Length: 404
Ligand SMILES: Cc1ncc(COP(=O)(O)O)c(C=O)c1O
Image 1 (cartoon, protein in one colour):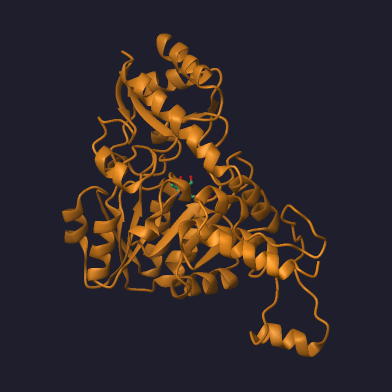
Image 2 (cartoon, rainbow, N blue to C red; image 1 turned 90 degrees about the vertical axis):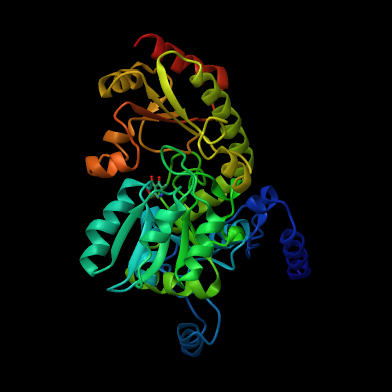
């Protein structure tokens, strides 16, 4: 036990320059008093002190130490440290869900009278957060196409404090130019926030391209097996402070158990993303050749409008493929119902392949106008390509399409 601190220091040094796959397994790992190899779950709401003086020092911030698991928990902290290392940020703040992470960013950084310019191609509940919650507090949002830089520029107002982008977007894989949007945001002292759910840090690091804050719904690929809901925000110490301050007061906190599940998920993230990406590219290529399919949306296809930009910004193209069937909503629903292997569910990033009809599920709460602006048609189907054998995935869709 005596040489443990030195060994930990050596490991930290090694990890500072290690590959992302290595960081996903080891960054932030603690070695606890029980010499456990895997990370421990600290299932405790509070922490004890040796004296009233020590308690006062911890609560007062003069001494480092755990206080209360709404805002300090060792298991959650390891998850935060690992995510910060992987995204190249100084600090990460874990949250109860992706939406909890977003709420903490917006309410931590914005106030009445502020304005957001947001991509119109974002997760439906975020539009609900902007239009139903932030709007009531006097924070307004203008929506623009993620790919139209001029539209972003034209939407800027004197009170614009934040630009919000999801790239690639759900479900059409539209890619926003992160470097250009960061420059635009900084030209008016605004922050660029990027939702990096679809890529994970394995495929894309928005902070390295100039974004100020990056967030994830850990519920997706970071878990990877559809077990827990969680979120995380990453950025500089300065920008994370208001996010953390909001979270510690509002209680949008990640549980230690969920942090532990995500830590174990991260250990296989690199390998899983490679497999998701390989199968998704094969499936997208195959779908393009099917007569029942009108159009395929996958950033890895040369036919995708932002294929070249995706090649620049991302290491690979991700695991989600969307396609329009020839026909209307009823044909899309029939295709989904015809599948036998895939799970009909709105989640993505799971080891199990999932299939959904975005217009009536994940994006069902959007107004028809907002959906149309985002290009989500009634004949669109989204497949999150899982880790089953590729031939089984293709065979399932082949029989579903043939029966239409
Ligand atoms: C791109 C994206 N961002 C954020 C969220 C919100 O995450 P959560 O469901 O963990 O609150 C989702 C959820 O599906 C999502 O798809």
